[in-house]
Image (cartoon, rainbow, N blue to C red; front, side):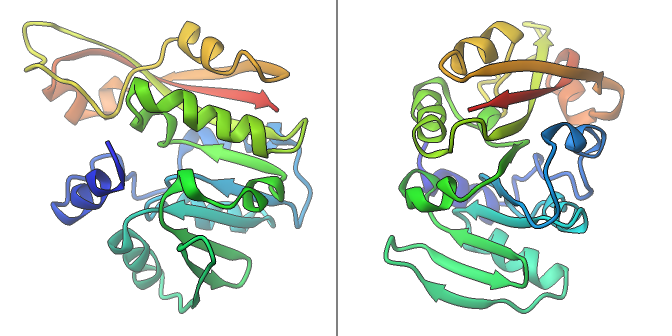
Length: 223
């Protein structure tokens, strides 16, 4: 699963992961990161999420990373924003618009300076979008490039399916149990589950795929 996979998803409009509104768990638990006005929040695999604008509304600077040019262009067009664009030495196209920057390109080749400058990370749909063979590299990039103590607000999905009705579902998104999150972030200084929400009733696409339970879980993790 490389950047081409996600670029094709956007081109084919297979974007069921896009919420279209600020995430409820982000709004409930953002305060737990204890950020100050002007602090810098990094959002990986951000798509055209409305969470970017909600974060800006909290008085922080925001940097997102997204590989799909279509997603980036739609974000700015749909929100009537006109960024200044430039090409970085890494090959990313950087779109700057006030306190928001979107790095268009591969997360894994993002310059270390971007994460090193972050005061916090918000991940709603990145970790759960990656297959098992990519997760270790994803988490290790944060462990290596974030400053010690930097908080991450991580939102995961934990779901069960009826085997007879799941139609050989393979993801993404991929379910994450509590044990999986603990194992993946075991080298970080702290991991704490803040809460969870039962969202099955509001997720018809999961029910159609044979889901019998869907929980959105929020974690606070410190580098």
